[in-house]
Image (tube, rainbow, N blue to C red; front, side):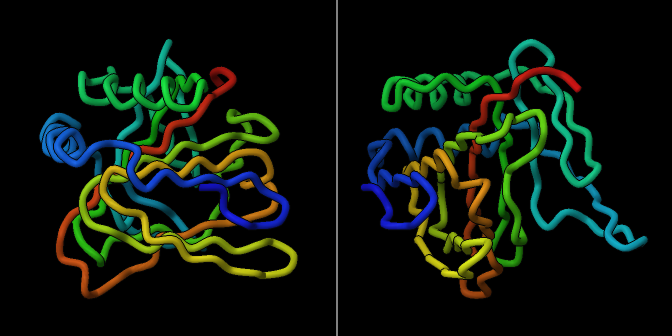
Length: 193
C-alpha cells in the first residue's frame, strides 16, 4: 500500500512476514543480537539513548549519527533471513542495518530524518517491525502535515525517494505498551567515512 503523502514515495506492507515466521524471527532477534546501550550528548548533557541498538553491515562499513560511532557486528542468521526476504520482495539490496530494541512503551525515538552523509543524497530505508505495535509518526518539513501509522508485527515500511529529504519521523513514547518491539532499519551505505 502506497501512502498518499506529498514529496515522498512511502509504501507499507502490513503482512510482509507471515505470523509464524515473524514470531520465530522475533524470538531469535531478541536473543541473538548483542544489544548496545549507548549515550547521546545534547546541549552539553549526556543521556542514555532511550532504546537499545546494534549495527550490522557488509565489508566493515561504519555508521555515525548524533556523534555515536557504530562499527559492524557480523550478520546473524536471523538478520540474513530478513535481509534476503526484503531483497526478494523489493528488488533492493541493502548492505547495512541499524537494529533497535524498544523494551516497552517508555523507549522511543525523537523526530529525525535518516539523512547522514554515508547514506547518500536520497536514501531508501526499509523498516521491518517485530513485536508490539507502535505508532510511527511522519511530519512534512515545510507544510508540517502529519501522518500516523501503526507499525504491526511482521510489517514492512519502505521509505523511498524524498522521504528523508522532505519528512521527519518519530516513534513516540506510549505508556500503555508493555511489550518489546524490535525494528530493523535496512539501508544502503556508500562507504566508510
